[in-house]
Amino acid sequence: MESNLFGVFEILKDINKFKEAFIDEYGNIAWDRDKNVDSNIYWNNRIYLCRDAVYLDSILESK
Image (cartoon, rainbow, N blue to C red; front, side, top):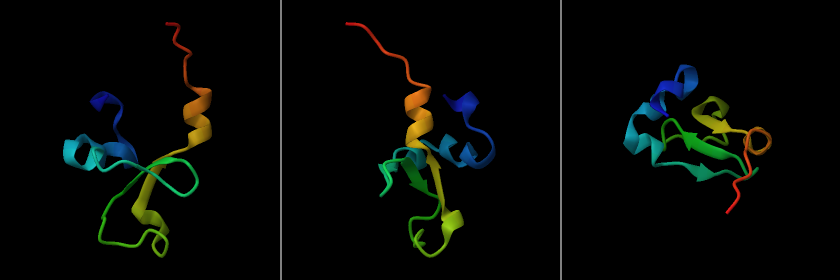
């Protein structure tokens, strides 16, 4: 996965930051760049993967 982490997602190469993932209020997979900053006030503190994009790019696995 590390080779896919570039641009705004480069910060997620730090495994400890990657582990801080959560589901935001809109259902997206998200990370706060600085967890001491309120992302509801400072919009550019949060990076996320849009839930719709994740769904569209998903692949059904058979059992």
